[in-house]
Figure 1 (tube, rainbow, N blue to C red):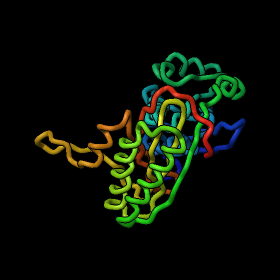
Figure 2: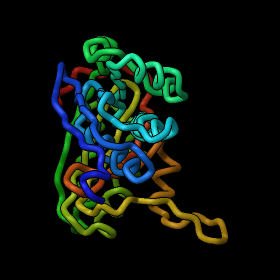
Figure 3: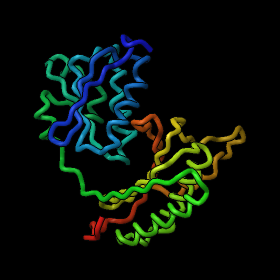
Figure 4: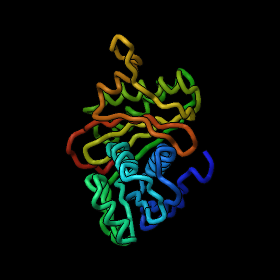
Length: 255
């Protein structure tokens, strides 16, 4: 894809939010790359992702669905709100009058968008790096067990261990690269995420008979509230799953 066929992204941090200025033509050719690039920007969990779209040439109104696609792909995790800014009154009216407005709010200024962003819920996070070796599965289980104990969520330990084991063993088998296990706790939810350096997405496929293929992902889908695969900034991917751990508040354990 040539530079002329790309949407250029200029990003900066403002008040803890990732603000992106978009320029170029948004159409069927650029839709997928823009979606994936915006998803990558949410993985560091800023307060919000705010896209300024005045310089974006929108080929047709349905192309705006790229922003709702980003919102839906990141809603369960990393749970970062997506907002749009259109300073131009005509551009703002067009977006505000489209179906996208039901899913992604649009504001007339960056300041208004930032003021509309609610404070994110408190989160805890721990990470551990492992080599692509069979022994790493045992190491990841020990890491999850210790963390669940420290975070007082031992009532979901078995499910967390099952998900972590499948994610790590899938990464060892199919990616064969160093991997990072990330555990994250926000009120009511535990996320288990594994990053590897293989960009090929994890997909739960069905055979022609209709039977599910890929037992590991089937286990993850059965145990978790939601799971997904997101492109990582370094060209790899992050496969993640979210467990409900109940409405309890975060206990004051050390991170």
